[in-house]
Image (cartoon, rainbow, N blue to C red; front, top):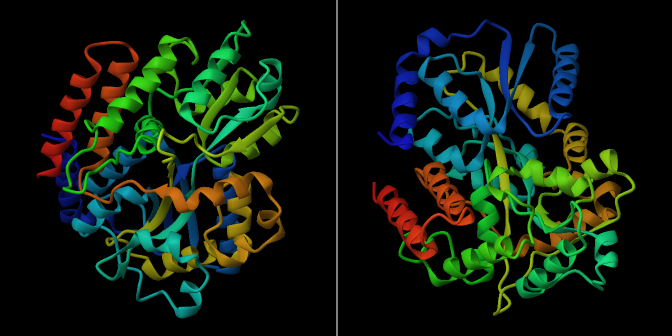
Length: 411
């Protein structure tokens, strides 16, 4: 049975056990995805301040690491023990909606509330004219580069194309010691996404115009050759498949990586953990025809249909999206603002790093909102690990992955 089938079975089972999930009156349980060490403290502070203003309502916060969040939610729903509210990857929302687990929020949303949002970030959670989630986090991706390593390697400016990146990465790796030109992620969440940067630059898309997988398109094959070529040239850190996104970010913060692609929140981490690091932020390199793309991401907070405290849960959601609370969360975690007033604040207007990410938004692609997406993403990551390790023919591996993805898409 596929992961998608198991997920749907779990959701159906959870609905049949709604009676078991009856919540304690006045208590709102919230499952929170862990973005950083600041996430838990922020939500605990939000809970306390909300409780002080709303006597009789208790907020219980549970912080869960991203890499186990979907499995935990699936298990909790199947057992009827899910929380009232949860942060989810917006790309998961279709499955939650199709199984009637997510509660539409339109009955609660006023014109004033809706007017707080930048439409670009609110729209991914609207399906069939109904709003099922609110954008709790928004992000894009850009390339960070180490100015000190660039200077040591005699590189005058950050690369604008992948060919220039390869040349620069080889120069930096040639400096010797534990210094590597390009930090390449090879395991866990967003391993597939790291590959899409190359795919998009070479003109390939995740899904073709006919709705089939683009993993075996010529552009995808060229991107795989590019990444494998960087590995073979020793222009990346060794043992790529043992490095998660966080692992590569840690190498960058330690001054051991010349370039890497990641989200805005790394800027905050650098300021706090490596304040002496001289770095810059620039666009993701372009391909031969000038194509480039960044990954646009929204995470949503949803209300579950089987919640017994919907009114209280909505009041807490409303509170989280006030300008004050949004500013604290967005600035603290290093995300892009989803509220108009927050976007207009001095912090964001004058933040040079965030301006680079904002400039890339017109080129942003989002994960397809399709059933079975998480399984397709895992198929992609598994194929990439084989390629990075040099196991089997590169083109054959991608064609096999595309065939597996197409089988899911046809379901």
